[in-house]
Image: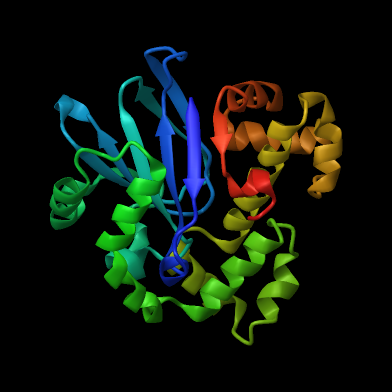
Length: 267
């Protein structure tokens, strides 16, 4: 399996986190149950050929556990990962509609599905070409950054930068808003509570370190990311991914990762 990322242009960076491409290689089985790591963001995914051999698009909302999806050899998977809290500004949709769900785009944004099919089919082979096409298609979205909730975006940025290790109590108090109001606005824009979002960012960062180190180093990874002990991190990974750190490491090692921010230290 091969996974690649590319950052958006500066104009779209407030709304789009990354463009990505995923492919099952010739060396892989014909079908693989792929584990999609949760990160608190929404994903617009394009698949070709999809069900019935047709172009297919879907919108995946934020969730607290990993999504497992079957992926197939000979099928191209391309996507746009939105910035956490940017769904409303980018699509006009309320994030509550898709939290924890993977929904066919045609059922909720039929005009978008048709436009994507007309402009993107056949799906570009290279991520660079796909990203360029997506940039042109969504160039007008850059005008919608004024729809973002500034306080929520500031909190998201702090939690991402701190890799989920910033103490939430004192952090929420520092915004000059009541904790209740800020939490409510965060859930309305991101779809998750600050606590769950922070938890996902921390376990995601630990997974990146797990990929780059042998499972035997999980004790050091636990300490590095503020878990009480190795057992604590193991419980978190089982809760999010449904597998032990050893099995997760084995699975992640089967994927060729290219230009992934967390692995390059640029996230």
